[in-house]
Length: 86
Image 1 (cartoon, helix red, strand yellow):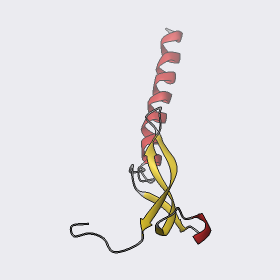
Image 2 (image 1 turned 180 degrees about the vertical axis):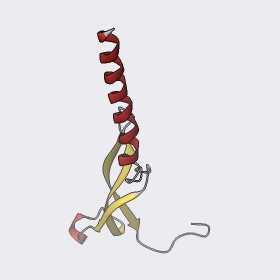
Image 3 (image 1 turned 30 degrees about the vertical axis):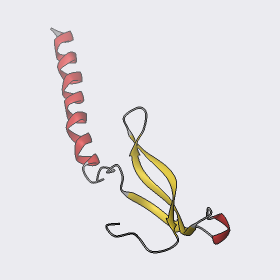
């Protein structure tokens, strides 16, 4: 009978921890894949041929393990006017 009381205390403790953990995480919004975290203008010497502007972009994505991750890439805007329709 003494063993039964010990088990109920352990289970109660696990339930209490499980109930508290989601409330703490709820204050941090989830990272939405594709959302921009940071961006900066690339210096003209780092632009590729034909680019009028360039940006270094850090954004949220999903990693190989299925968990949120950060990724970085470069975006180049070509010289000239955009064609009709974009």
